Image 1 (spheres, rainbow, N blue to C red):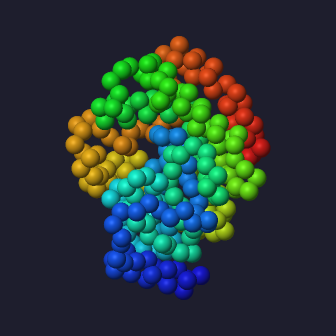
Image 2: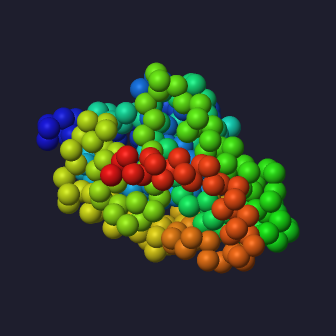
Length: 269
């Protein structure tokens, strides 16, 4: 295993520094890609850092995973995604906010408490000057609010096919025991990662460290908005910032989905 890791390390460095990349391209939809899907502001970026730092330590690359190079480790489905590193023996893990699609065969789905998602998403868009109303209006917004969360989440829970491999993870579980959840992910890929590597990955992906990395390696588009911060608090609050009326609105809108999610959690335990 050590020799394999060394060969992969050499191969990865050659790819990084000597590969002639084509202009900007989307990650190729290979059949063995694993898609890390979630509704926006569900913790996908943080989990991507955890994954990237695990791979970085496992292959002993001695790199700093940051906001400039994170998409080389975990590329994102978007119109302008950079060419991704073809690291082996790992499958390529691709970040996505897409609703259900039959084109994804292997899926890690990340679900977060919808009330906390609404708070985080609201501040994210507000600080980008993309939303100028209050949070109560945001929650009821057809495009961004709780109905959009329900539509996205239900699409994966209800429409996924028997031929697809869908594994559901919960943001709150990652916050409470990130090493355990990371181990689950890599075990599903067929790798037993040493506890020391997982501990290092969690330490390097700490929210305080990510905030520093955002300041030093974030793009111009991230820095030009004075109040914008991609990394916020990441806390589990169950929507405590919201009014009781807004929390009740979310509860009613998500009632059926939460029942299904609670059953999934029970089955997982």
